Length: 388
Image (cartoon, rainbow, N blue to C red; front, side, top):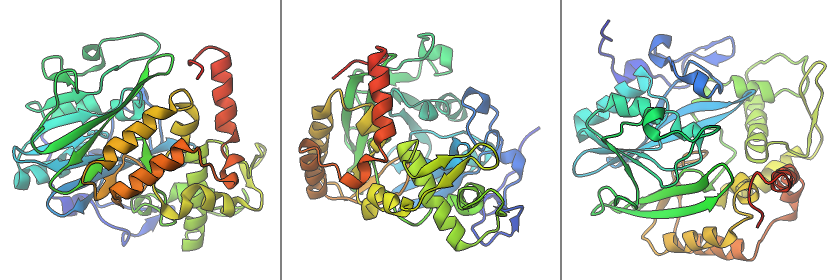
């Protein structure tokens, strides 16, 4: 049965929507947010994915944001749309729900067709799983992937994973799309065991916007707007005790957001105690200082998971990439996670490279990142990833 035409204003509402069972109700019907492929990567919110469309740079850059996570540790994942002379480029596809596709169609009506879809990482399954469905939704668009694509536990060709064989090209090996308007840089490849880490970043020259996937992040105290539509993760982690109700208030939302950040960036924060009888998490005093250390006041930084699990093996690769990006006329950064857009200058990127080479690591972060580093040592010991 054909889907009736629905406008973006009908599909989405903002935080003014009423709260039902602790969740802000979106204007979209649940059927239009269905994601049938969620069993391939069973992350919260599973088969229902709301999409929030935001215009980041007027007339140039838009983001399509959806929640995903484990055990209510849910943070937004972002697809970015870029306006080009020929139409639109989609960078880092998210779940291609009917709602998401309808919002892209609205952009197409004003700015031209989707001409390119870019899967910008070789190792991020959360980014790969949405590509085949997005490619089917826009059958005339070329599909570009980074070098070194791999699958686990079996090494399968991309066509077996749903990528369109005739339209799929490899960035850098087969050239780059829209080279007169975009400047492409490669972070990697870096061997990880099952397959390499490789990320493609791109500068939209007209707006000075540098798009990246996982390499750089910035985190502020303001929780993402998408979590106003589904605040359950905030309210769940904002409780201090398992007997507390999930009542909604700004203080609980802020508390929950800071704790979500610590989980998402460090996996096992040092201030958390696991109590499996009644409530899985109990927080020791001092955890707010841990958030302040990790967030660095909203400053741009290398994601801790990448620093501790990927780049111990090849630290110069990150510094060289930062310095290459610093040679570009960058004005803002648009990563696939956390805050966006982030004001960014070449001077900031060079300063970040300097700190990386000097291995500046604030002491306040070390305890929170101890689990990541211990995990890295374990996988090295078992030979699952190469040693530095």
